[in-house]
Amino acid sequence: MRLSDGAFKSQEDGSGLAHFHRLREPAAIPLRIKRDRPVQDWRQVQQRCREALTESRRNWLVNDLMVSPEALDAIGVGWHHEYRVYTFPERFPDGTIIGIATRKPDGRKAFLKGGNRGLIIPPALNLAEPVVVVEGPSDVAACLTIGVGVVGRPSNTGGAAMLAELLRDGGEVFILAENDEPGITGAKAIAARLAEIWGRPVPWVLPPHGAKDIRAWLVEHDAHTTEELREVLL
Image 1 (cartoon, rainbow, N blue to C red):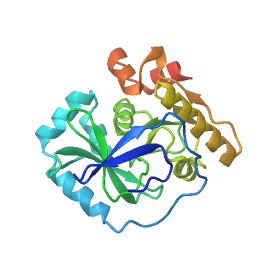
Image 2: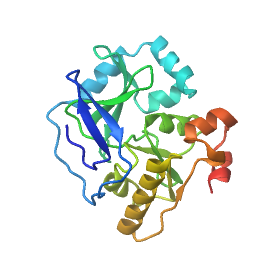
Image 3: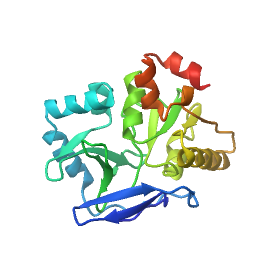
């Protein structure tokens, strides 16, 4: 299992899943995307996982995460029947699926062995509008639930080079940190690296009112509009 950004330490237990632990200190964030094409056809894996996701399983995750079913569909949520986990595809900036992240019903996260980390990119992303960059698929789904332009990075320090390529010609970009030490350190590092690449300031922000992440804030405060989110973030 190879991680391009060194944001996690992995442990493989023979299950076919690699389990990850966040590192407190970010590794050096690369300026280039590693474009090795995976041997595995992740598009086919994703298709099988989508077909295996029943309406009842999707509804369970909707209720667990407190997001809309449309938001989960937009990021391509699926179900891996063998491993009994929810799946979320990660992509190159051009949309190619290069790996699949997983989430167990109890919330534990991992990654299907053999893939590479990428971005969570909603298909209807409008780069002319402001984009919030969050950490992980559940926060992407939370922002989509209220209509906020959003892209997900794979970890606290992951995906900088891909974000630079995907968002370089778009509008405003805000890096949203998770409200803990690794989250803040990673968001600062991502913002600094994008500013270096683009030659313009890139702000990083915390979730409002001390919330752990944007999904927790949305659940607690029942925010429903893009304007409300922008008001508390900016």
